[in-house]
Length: 572
Ligand code: C2O
Ligand code: CU
Image (cartoon, rainbow, N blue to C red):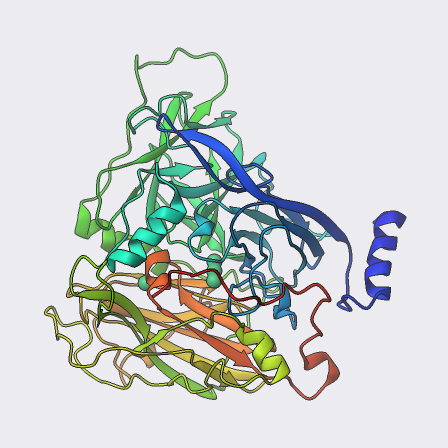
């Protein structure tokens, strides 16, 4: 570390802004503004960071402190979240609108500290207010400490790939229409790899991501699903890959011919250029709603060879719908923590809180005349549809003891037991309750949460990529149908379960997770499908301070965005 960097760290510490142990410091300036971008022959102005889409990549080493000055030069409110970064004792700059802060309004700025701890691998950052994250996102790459290397052979080069979605229309408009109509959102017009749709869409020939590879070399691909609403199933024609990490933690090497990645997940895999030199498609498609549109990139071997086919390379073959869904689940079930001497894991074994939480799409009567039907869809966890406070945020209310902002009564158990995954609609026998309910945890509590998908309301159920802030958790089990409290737990994997921040709870099925609540603060949990999130499939944990001084929340920074009355916001 240079003296200059040391000096900057020292000054920050001296000013009492942050007292966490710091090895080094990385400083970024994020200017949120509108910039023009063209895809599918459509030019539109959209919110970006520094004019880039996807936004800038943050590189750091394990345990470093990253400081980002977020400056809002746009015409919309913004917050920025560091997805998968635990932010020990420092929820203040976690960046969640109405949960940990009020938004950064146009013209204002906020210096955000990103406290890395044991994360190593790939994470990402994204906006966390309305649907702004569709265009405001970028990669976070956390390298091993200087003295260490990867627990796999050093790759020749690395490529981050962010999956995204493109609407020909303004995303804010898409969001507002979606809320007004009370139904699913207008589908995006294309899926993207690093902002490029690939040549399978109308008017997209030129916009294709290319990865140049040298024959015989191995590459590390850092895949990030920053899409809004879909799980992506990906294959590279004629190549197997080896998964080595997920959500900022290493996994046991897993050889596979496809990966499935949900919004909020990151997957690191090795690609060996071991096929005859040629051009190969890397293609992704979804298994929900719209089978058949592919986003594509091209893996292009360098060297002198005659390209055998006159036009495009050939697409890899994809499974049919139901098989594709099953294969996606099967893929995530095969992932295991590396869990060796150098990267030990610690699965909580003394569970103090057993939670059983249903995930549902419910209906409410529509109170406006803008709805398509006389009801609107809402999402719920344990039948509670979460409403976010409008002029306050939960963290500040908790810290300052302001009453009436949230209630500490999120239920640990579903209030109604029924055949959760039956094939027919149970109808409206228990409309979702609304509220701002949080679940309180004492410091160092050990939580087991079974997330049970339901077919309530809409009939056939869907996967839910559930994401937790402030902690990673172990996925100790999952299955189809209803969770059985007697027969399922004996099959839990407590030896090497994957350590993640997002779990794709299978359609008509369940997942069981465990985590230790050792991070005091307010931590959001929600479905990372943006439409479900907007519909209220979310809740928050408050982890209380412990006894020792280093078990307490740090004080807030001096420049927390001020809470002001919002513009007439359109939320459910
Ligand atoms: Cu990717 Cu609440 O976040
Ligand atoms: Cu969901």
